[in-house]
Image 1 (cartoon, rainbow, N blue to C red):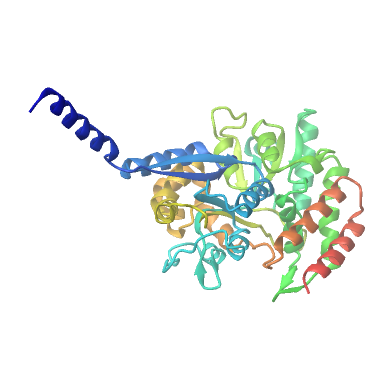
Image 2 (spheres, rainbow, N blue to C red):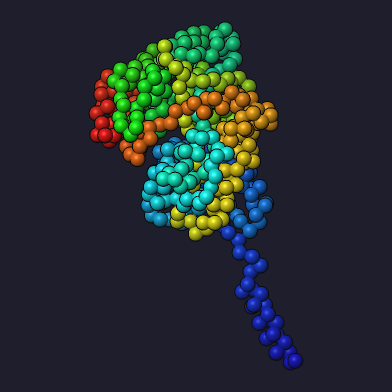
Amino acid sequence: MTFTKAIASLLCGSMLTLAVPAFAETQLKVYISSQHQPDVWRKALDQYEASNPDVKVSIETGGNTSEAQSQYLNTVMSAKDSTLDVLILDVIRPAQFAAAGWTSPFEGKDMSAYLPAYAEANTVGGKVVALPAFADSMFLYYRKDLLEKYGIEAPKTWDELKAAAKKITEGEGNADLQGLSFQGKAIEGAVCTFLLPYWSQGKTLVENGKLNFDDEAAVNSLKLWKSFVDEGVAKKNIAEVATDDTRKEFQAGNAVFAVNWSYAWGMSQSAESAVQGKVGVARLPALAGGDQATCLGGWEWGVSAYSNHQDESKKLVEYLSSKDVSKFMAMNASLLPTYPELYKDAEVTGAVPWFADALQVVETAKPRPVTPRYNEVSEVIRTTVNSVLAGVATPEEGAAQIKARLGRIIR
């Protein structure tokens, strides 16, 4: 073989080698809320990549409210954008996304291992349209150290909370310490703000698809929240406070009580927290003579219908929704498990002791109104609650507005 022919042969072999890579790597992008500790989810994804070396997963984080996330995802999905493969969705969204054709169903998926509320939320028209990421419910956070200092038990009624908050803030004499932080901004959390005392009076909002509005209960609910502002228990600008604002205020040591979701616990115990080791968690109070009630939350994993990697994305979601990952996120991010048996797991309760008492709360938490037009229902309630707290409308006017506007949506 001549030198020229030898070089030609080598070049030909090299070209063939370059033309056929050793393996094709699948790139997946997961959308996660910025408030749900994406750094811990990253660790779970690292474990997945280690077991699946042909898959690389990147995270895109989004806004810190359900509305901000929904607005962004609505834009992406409406454009049929294939950039995102896996989406985290508020528990109120799977039905909406499925109806729009934005998510891909999980054929033949058995949902019996999950908490029933989440199996139900993710099943639409007999099809499983998403899988649970983590459970959630609203709880009352309180300064355990301050309640002990003043000899006060965790309140079971809102009146007890108000009295306790006044006693402690007056005793502490700290202008930065507010009695109660809750969600007054026109966000999804304000829907729960309205419903907590409304439900505790034994009332429902929607029943069998029909509006079941109780005027007196609605006025009482709005009066309660406005009274916290008027009596100085909550700060004057509570109408500007969103979910993570409440978390930050409580974590900074600037609130005696706070209404928030389970994610706030882990952050309150971080090294940067001013209240590390000083936090108690309890069921939310009731109106006098009523029953304690809380709002069901939770987040779900959906696969984008426009993903170019359907099988790989569904496999990833199966992993993220597995019992092992649910346990990992419970222990490392204080996100409530979606598997009932994990609430009795010694490792989980050792890492997050109050989870041992959380299962009953999650199992009895009430879902927000079930209706295909939920987005409109939410907009009516949250904007009206916000206007009452801002002093634009009275509680009576707010209740009348909610009733009239919902009456045009739910028939």
